[in-house]
Amino acid sequence: MLLFFQILFTMFIAEMGDKTQLLMIAMTSRYKLRDIIIGTAASILALNAIAVGLGAVISELIPGWLIKVVAAVAFFYFAWSNLKQEEEGEEEEAAEKGGHPIRAVFGTFFLAELGDKTQLTAIAFAANTGLQQALSVWLACSIGLFAADLVGMMVGYLLGSKMPKYFLNRLAFAIFAVFGFTTMAEGAGLLLGEGMIRWYIAVGVAAVFAVACFITWRKHGGCPNP
Image 1 (cartoon, one colour):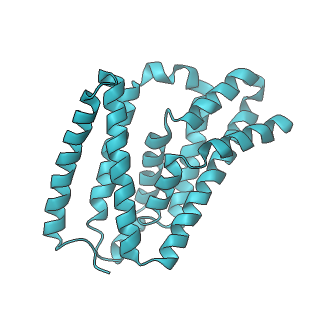
Image 2 (cartoon, helix red, strand yellow; image 1 turned 90 degrees about the vertical axis):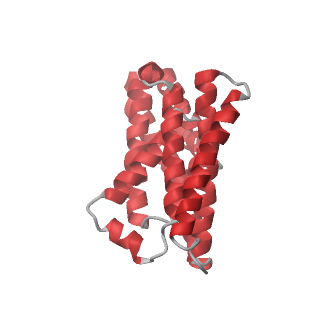
């Protein structure tokens, strides 16, 4: 039991201030709390199952740069799509379409957290404790990670209740855009090395993203008004 709480506390502290906490804040501008909780919980359980069961070989099966590039594209997409949310019913309408919001939350969180320090921490715990403690490690890592990200969800909804909707939309746009840029740079660095070329690629992709955002902004008559 002591090991269980030690792992849980370590994962909670490791996740505090991490990018996925900010991701939770951004997601609150797009989805209902129920969808975020279900999608995030399912993603965390899957991620830690991979870490405990197949973590040792995941880096050999999926190139790290590819994971980063796909995650960056997902972040840029969510930032761009935030510009289109002018009608308040759009989010609720999307949430009623079967399970699409849950799948979107699951996929985005999964890509953001895959290969992150918290997953590497779970791999380290699993390697140190052995197969006999695999279930305890999986549960402790999952609960600790979810508890930390729940803080991000609550902050997002608190901001949403105190601030105008357009403010949270713009904050979400900024968070997703920054994550897209930095994650693209990380992916390019893993593929091509840590030189300036990775920043040139990230800036180039960001420029294409900026053009797409400008076209969308003009098409919809500007960002959502206060």
